[in-house]
Amino acid sequence: MPQAGAGMGDNAVSQLLQMMASQQQQFQAFMEQQTTFQREMFEQQSRVTRQKYKADLPKFHGRADEDLKLWLFAIKEHLSGYARGRDSCDSRFVDMVAPFLGPDAMSWYREFEIILGDRPRTWFLFKQQIRIRFRDSDFEFRLLSKLHDLQVTGTQQEYTSKFLLLLSQPSLELLEMIKR
Image (cartoon, rainbow, N blue to C red; front, side, top):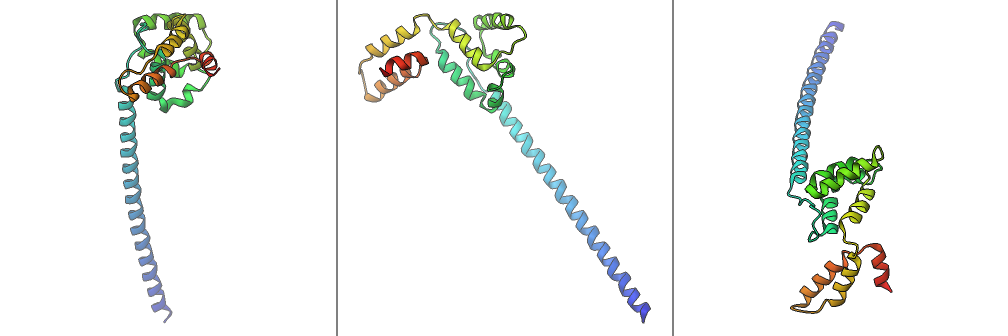
């Protein structure tokens, strides 16, 4: 009788080994499926990121008729995925922005880079210096004049749009003056 039990034990062990081998194959197939899924998701996200980065973002040429504040906002939004780099104390974010400068603005940027030397070109410093260089010295006065001269012509919505556009442009100093 002990031999019959041993035969049954061998059979149970054999079945257990087969079941474990089957589970291992199923698990391996599942892991391969997960790996394929993750790779596809990563590739899809990479394509979206590349497409977003390659989207048509206007260049800033430094002309008087360009809205510098709107361009800076568009850059910030366009590259929002790089917010950590934008807020850091190094030059990586500004290096991504530089290709969106036209010839005149690029000439200014080259000089800006030379003047700073080894110091980092932070986003804060870049915005500060590009405003100094490309905003007219009487920018705030002209803006206040436009706000003063603004009249309702057309619909209320058109007037509100013009008003909000003008209001979105001032610097912090002008905002304090308007509040008074």
